[in-house]
Amino acid sequence: MKISPVTNNTCNYMQNNYTLIPFSGNVSIPQKKIFVEAERLFNICAILKRKLSNKIKNSGNQEKILAFYNKFIKVSDSSYAYMRFFHNFARKFAKNREVEINLESNRLLDIAKSDEAYIFIMNHSNGKQDPAMMGVLGTLLSGAYINLGKAKTAPRAKIIANEDILKSMNKFQRAIYEKFGAFGINANLFDAGKGKNSEKIHQLIDNFCKNKNHIFIFPEGKMGMFKDLDLIEKFQPGVGGMVRSAVIDKKQVKVIPVGFAYNNKTKSFLGSIYIGKPVCFKSENNEIFVNQANIEFDLAKDSYKKFWNYKQKAIDEFKPILHKNIPVLGREQSLYIAGILCENLRICIEKAKRQLPQHPMNIDNIIKI
View 1: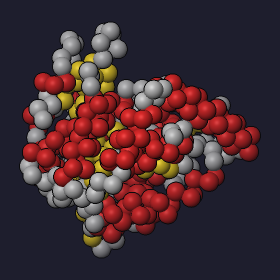
View 2 (view 1 turned 180 degrees about the vertical axis):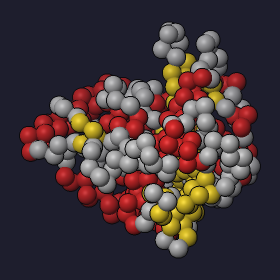
View 3 (view 1 turned 30 degrees about the horizontal axis):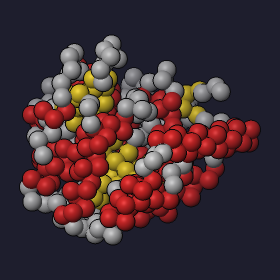
């Protein structure tokens, strides 16, 4: 399958004479019937393979799964018990993982102290190991809420996932995962049926705007399988649309970019998580404003350095999203938001790589609860 860069005028703003925030990269996916059918058949095979794998893994554990289902499914989402269940469930994914994480920044603690819901975006670098990193993140965040006495009131996690993964589970497993926040959508690259996601996403955003739930998402989606492409070519602009919808309704939205990195030179699982500064978007008079967040000049691309002025000191200052010094309005804002988030995430990935551990450590050293 050939993938070529988008070159239409609505997407490709990456030109040297622009000192404004651009969106660039992304790829053009040819929506041909043969590709739609090929992906449909591929998905059927993938689901069958996952079902077989789940059946093997769960062999002899069906009674335990059913017992857990009966115990957990009736637990109120707004109870202390729910947060404790979530904490223990996430920790199982994090078990025996050696991970370096920038806890000294206190960014997770600041999130937990707030009553506000956040959107978390993470790179999809390793399909097998990324869930473990999510487990570490979820364990630490839920542990912070519990320690602060906010287990009942904290926003609940909603994790956007490929619907096909949930389809491969038995009905009890699926119910458990969905209660823990798994939120299935059509993640196909070629299927025109992706439009059916809109209603589900709308409800998700509505609850987010009411500070009922955090949103966790891998913005590369299935594009993450193309390891030879840069992040900006895989980053899905639909994430920008989701954030725009939320900021129009909520007036202020904070997105936390989280970089994952792995040390593949050792036999042990050695990972790194870098929790970025909140990328804050504000809406005022149809314009959207954004802060500098993680745009550090030793790592940022030139267009972002120019936009934020290389020697600017007030990093919390907000600037309007502009194009040729004219505020960007309407749906086109989504493309610029996607570009801003992609650049922030890219920088956090680089930060994660820089702090990768070289020797094993125990996850229990950082998870205290």
